[in-house]
Amino acid sequence: MGKLADKTAIITGAASGIGRASALLFAEQGARVFIADRSEAVREVAAEIGDAAAAFIGDAGDKTFIDGLVAAVTAHGPLDIAFANAGISGGMNRLLDLEVSEWEEVLRVNLIGAFLLVQASAREMMKAGKGAILCTASVAGIRSGAGGSPYSASKAGVINFVQTSAYQLSGTGIRINAICPGVIETGMTQPMFDMARERGTEGKIGQLNPLKRAAQPIEVARLAAFLVSDDASYVNGQAVAVDGGLSASHPVVPGKIW
Ligand SMILES: NC(=O)c1ccc[n+]([C@@H]2O[C@H](COP(=O)([O-])OP(=O)(O)OC[C@H]3O[C@@H](n4cnc5c(N)ncnc54)[C@H](O)[C@@H]3O)[C@@H](O)[C@H]2O)c1
Image (cartoon, rainbow, N blue to C red; front, side, top):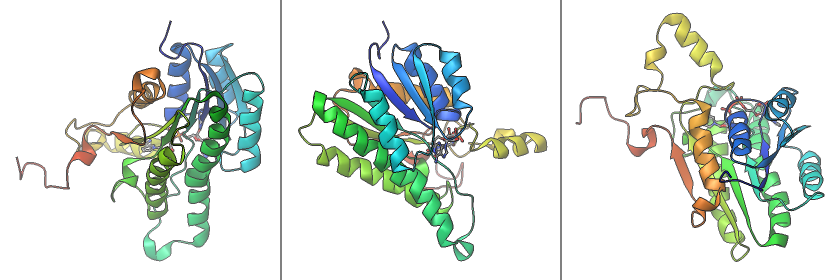
């Protein structure tokens, strides 16, 4: 049996990219996956997985949708795993041009969306005295250089929210962690990859990390599957980077220091 055998998991943002890869991997490892996305394409992911999956269409930043999703899942049994992964980049508008509405939408989806799933899941998991929660943050939440200011601030917020939540959930048996992906080829970053391939500069993507490449969603999904599994039973309140080593260094001119 797989490492997630008999576990029930909710994953948001599962129609594409990291969420989709995680849904496929969690199911392969034995979990029943309840996958949510605002895109209808999540139904195709559920169909690909088969009987172990059910799809829900809705907005991860909407309390009514998330509460309804958690209620629908827990009506059939306990919830073991919640993965708040849905997110938007919000574009790269510069500081002097940014509108309040851009901040509001990015924070609503990326940060409040994480809060909604964490809160609703934790309430249910407390009944069983155990559970594993995971949130997708980003290297953008660690320092500058990987997204616009609302996006980076939202992901820094997710990291901090995970840290405070680990303590808010003291004594409940629930673990909560974050993952911080670097450059991953997904729906969110596809335009950058497409443009680079068109220009013949694909090799430059990821050139600043020591592995000198971007990653595929499955490489993030494997970390996610570990963190929500019992193998990570003592990992709590952490933000784990999956970025080829990018966030391990201050920025340096390649070749000048070593
Ligand atoms: N791709 C990267 O390089 C990268 C790096 C760091 C962090 N991340 C984070 O990874 C997570 C997954 O993104 P991805 O890279 O797989 O991109 P993606 O665009 O391929 O997948 C994101 C999914 O989230 C869904 N979504 C967006 N807003 C939603 C909402 N309000 N309600 C429901 N679903 C919504 C989208 O429809 C999409 O299916 C995001 O939180 C993103 O910020 C991505």
